[in-house]
Length: 80
Image (cartoon, rainbow, N blue to C red):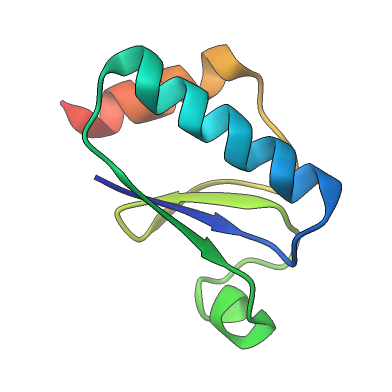
């Protein structure tokens, strides 16, 4: 599973990174984490508000930092 954090490195982006890693570890997933910080790459995803979370190239959340439980549900659904 490829988890991508889209954002310029702001505190909310860093929080989303920590939350996504915690969720993936809680689920015991094999994952690759990538931070996408280039604005053109972020726009290519169709994201206009950061931070955003993409799983296997599909944007799941943008413009907010979801709670750990929400990220666990998103990643758990993507893994099945």
